[in-house]
Amino acid sequence: MAKINYAQEFNRSIKDPDNFWMEQAAHINWFQKPQRALTKDAEGFYRWFKGGKLNTSYLALDAHIENGRGNDTALIYDSPVTQTIEKFTYLELRDRVSRLAGGMKRLGVEKGDTVIIYMPMIPQAVVSMLACARLGAVHSVVFGGFAPHELAIRIDDAKPKLIITATSGIEVDRIIPYKPMVDEAIKMAAHSPENVIVYNRRLGAARPDGENDIDYATLMKIADPVRCIEVDATDPLYILYTSGTTGKPKGIIRDNGGHAVAMHYSMKHIYGVNPREVFWAASDVGWVVGHSYIVYAPLIYGCTTVLFEGKPVRTPDASTFWRVISDHEVKVMFTAPTAIRAIKKEDPKGEFIKQFDMSGLRYLFLAGERCDVSTLNWAGEKLNVPVIDHWWQTETGWPIVANMMGFEEQFDVKPGSATKPVCGYDVQILREDGSQSDPGEEGYVAIKLPLPPGTLPNLWGDTERFVKGYLTKFDGYYFSGDGGYIDPDGYVFITGRVDDIINVAGHRLSTAEMEEVVAKHPDVAECCVVGIEDDLKGQIPLAITVLKTGATIESFQLQSEVVADVRKEIGPVASLKKVLVADRLPKTRSGKILRKVIRAIADGKEFAVPSTIDDPEILKEIEDLFKEQMVGSFEKQA
Ligand SMILES: CCC(=O)SCCNC(=O)CCNC(=O)[C@H](O)C(C)(C)COP(=O)(O)OP(=O)(O)OC[C@H]1O[C@@H](n2cnc3c(N)ncnc32)[C@H](O)[C@@H]1OP(=O)(O)O
Image (tube, rainbow, N blue to C red; front, side, top):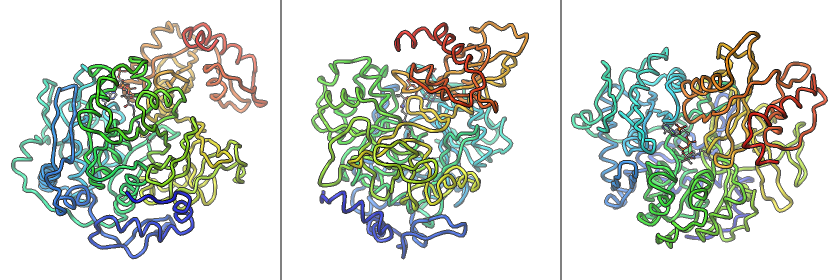
């Protein structure tokens, strides 16, 4: 791989984005090349490669086949929960994708239609995504850990013509029946899809048949394969919903052209991997990591990707990751710190690692949540490869800050920092008034516009929220929602969200959404949900409630009902386990709940009593409440 200099490239990407990204765009196969990289649309938003025509499914599959690589392995499905390992060549994957696309076309799916995919980590999920891309249909993959109510919200927002699902998923040793959840979601939603394609996994899960259900296998038998259709670079490839500060999730739009260019660029320059090598992102196709680094980037770049249906522990034990790396000769791996913490807890000395040939592993990348120093160090020591913490968001689709492995010099790691801004991202730390922070001074993490290719051009059906949420706080900047600082050496440190978003085991969740559910309990007068520190999951939600006058419910009963409600409305992924009952909540004089202070008390951290507090006495009550009811965490902090 030709090595180039980070500083020069970074400066060029910021000063001359047009030429910088036109050069990168030359690495992908366009049906019609764009004449310019950067333009503005009718609403004044930046767009990449307008005028270019391409197809993302073509880039991920057909282009490699035309290059003589049809018999190379494109996808390895490794499923410890079903004890299956299955490999698909580019040809085999293309044939499945083009056939499913043909089947979808028979069902009336056309360019621009939306399709929801609610599936476990099985090859048919990847096939479905690429089949949509082949037709120019816009997919929206919904993570399986979300409950029917969450799926219903997304159905009403995306208005899919079709839903593709499977009969079931497997969570370690439990069968999760997906199809009944889809049926329930459709009942809840105002919008009705025309058909539901169901892949029957034959695992014994209930499989209720609906009038408009289509069996995946039958459809594949009768469908004719179809060719890729040409789409505009600025046409949407997918919508991916992510938690916002209000209850309703936001539909992040990803375009085709900018995304393809960014995916290709990132594999080489950030992840330092070569085509034909094996890349493994141990995440889920329901998250952005799954979209970008299980499906699109490795395939567009011509790598072999691994689709892993299992957990870092319990499937069957803490050796699984190392077995996968060794069996499939993984060169570069990506996972969330929480997965490494789970392994470290089970196997602190890393004994399992010694049982496998890990000599092929070049780098381990971590992202999805803040990486604590001990996890970073443990992984580096035990694996004996560079462990690279990097930072990005669903909105951007690819890394914002990283130690870029494709360059001549690799920077020394400073634990707690994701290193330096990636080419294309002019990351700045701003004060409340919009002025630039000094080195080392904490502020809001913002990115000067334009954002590079592949990042969100808008929100699905909600331009106003896009502008308000990202572009208004600092004129001319994208506001990330995170706080942080840049040290005098230019290293970026992300210190955490400045809003009510929490990150539980690498899953981004909204406390506002949880509060809405808790508040609906008939005995709850008011409540708040905050994210508190957790050794394993990084953060977990904690609900604090005040009961209605006269309510006699026992606190353990309330907890079990509220936990069940949150699981039912949001899903198991929310991981709300603890609900406390307080006499009062600390508030400002204007009635705003002091969540930050509550969080600090729960985490045993120092805090300043806000001058706007209505009654400082309540803080003492909350402190006592935590001491009484959260014995475990408080003892640990003491
Ligand atoms: C950089 C940009 C980004 O941030 S993209 C997001 C990156 N994040 C990630 O990749 C997520 C990383 N986390 C993980 O993969 C998992 O949390 C790992 C570490 C594997 C642990 O999994 P697990 O033990 O299941 O814990 P969890 O907290 O994820 O799950 C909580 C409850 O939800 C359930 N769940 C999870 N996934 C599903 C699913 N697909 N379908 C149905 N249920 C699911 C879990 O079983 C668990 O349930 P329960 O509470 O035990 O009953």
